[in-house]
Length: 122
Image (cartoon, rainbow, N blue to C red; front, side, top):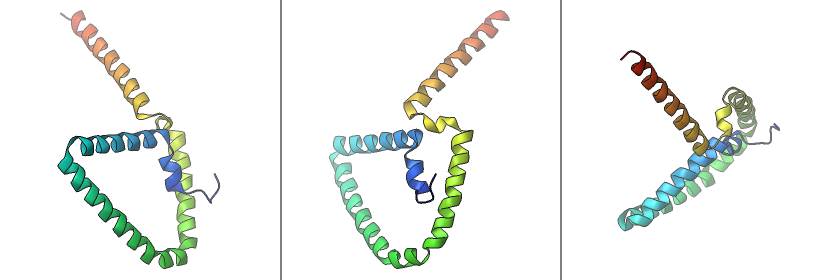
């Protein structure tokens, strides 16, 4: 992977992370739509977070620019760590739906095995 790639962006593009974020976003939107008061409070909170984020970035930009070489080094290490995670945890390349399905099948097999063993000793 090229060092110009952001480790954070690359991590958010992993299917497991991306689908988990989509699930949370969908749930949040559903709650906001279902409960008007929570929708209003959530909307106000979103505006506040956007405003604070903008101000923080505006004020932090000079500092971030001066720390750019150190940030690039940290990003390089993070990319190496991400490579390792992807190699060692292939589950990261599956969606939450796929992971849940696999876990459901595995749990069914465990339950069937437990039932079979229990019946053998009865």
